[in-house]
Every structure is written in structure tokens, then in C-alpha cells.
Length: 96
Image 1 (spheres, helix red, strand yellow):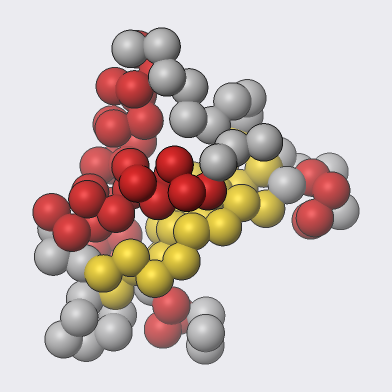
Image 2: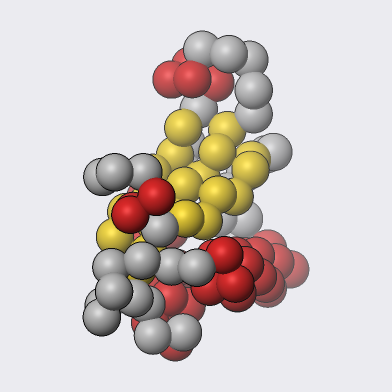
């Protein structure tokens, strides 16, 4: 199982570099979802001034996280072992 604290340690600076506050990091696994789908790494972030992210913000953060995870994996640090889906969103879109 992936270490949430380690993921936050990696993701938070990426969010901050874009001017976002990290709100939540959660892993949904097959056992939690119960629907047979692969695991999902859910990242929620927001702009401090608005409490939201627009779709372009989500895409930019997703690219940064993916690129950072790829760099770490190439260096031998597999943050998320196995298949998973990265979901980046605004907490405003979920009603918190």
C-alpha cells in the first residue's frame, strides 16, 4: 500500500509551485470501491483566493504530479506500485 504521508510530501510542493493549496490526498483501492476498478489516487487542491480550481488548473497539476512520479520511478522510487488512476479536482466540485 502506498504511503499517504510520502505522497503528500511529493505532491504538496508541486501544488504550491502552481499557487495552489493542497486540500486532500486519498487512495481508493479495489477493496474500498468494491467495483473491481483499479486504484485511484485522488488529489484535491484549490486556489486560496477562490477555493476552486478550473479544469486548466487540474490539468496543470496532474501533469506536474505525473512528471514528478515518473522522475522518482526512473530513480528507483516507485511511489505508487502497480496500476492506478490519478484524479485531480477541486473540493468545490465535490461539495466537500
